[in-house]
Image (spheres, rainbow, N blue to C red):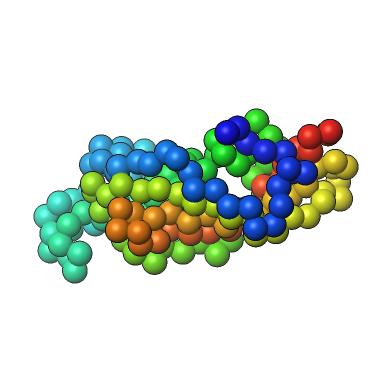
Length: 150
């Protein structure tokens, strides 16, 4: 399914996104290097092994970015005017190399745009789960969407 227009959403609409993604060492290393994040827990196997986790942790900003990316096709692809912000970002469980992640979305709120007639703001509640069904990342995303008649 492609992204929906503002007026096609209802509060409570829920999506279990079809695409899943197994996180690789390459994903984590490249993202950490590209964003100049030298945190040893992400890029140094020996330091990570000596930590309380005993292994490399996946970069949290990669985890967040992957969660949003997995949701785009079903929520805002082709209908987005702008992402307005993210709120209540939390990472309640760590992500490790080899974890397979999947996303779920629920519409949390809807509000007509005051500055763009026919368009509106959808607040999505995104959750990312691992293969053990543990929530590893969650947030609210506020997106300004085109209306179907805009």
